[in-house]
Length: 283
Image (cartoon, rainbow, N blue to C red; front, side, top):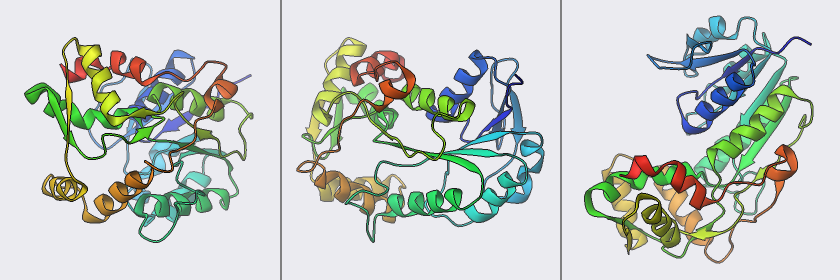
């Protein structure tokens, strides 16, 4: 049986990079969509293109059977044209969505949920074979603490008691590869979680254990956090969507399930394991 050729968007990111690595290790022909220079293992073809310019995608999509789609923008503007371009070449798209889609938290002002909801709708209406992966928070987002940890040995952030089942990018990638290379997840929207709820304060402590020195959590107020994120250049609508949604999770935490194990045959990796895998990023 001929292996499908797969295009991975977001290929220089944590999840996309892990998908590229898994496909390559399995001997699946894989292309990585890039906007600039990037290093990949021998045998991975890097192709220039930009999801913000659908007309640029033709060479990357030529001869492709399936696409792993990571949407890098905060709105669905341009998405219909991108999905139309994919549909001219590929037969399948696996979209990296969000656990917030379809949840009770969905509503006006939830900027991230809104664009993921629209992307899912477009993908499902495209006529392509599709899967929409709905992971909870990415463990990799805690890399945003790395500079603080290296410089001060502490993390200044709100919501010390916020507990989430953060998911290792390797687990999201394993499910994505299953969806890209088999028919097991056609038309599915699996909710993907880590194996347990871990508070932010505990996440910081586990990072400290991984790097061999204590790291403390210095809690700030939500208002302080909003101003800090805006000063760091985060878009206001993103900040105003994320932080209130996270605050609500303290009383209504995300569910924990075993979908990763059910789909891949391997239990989801713990945040402790993620911290060990990424210890060098925090040292």
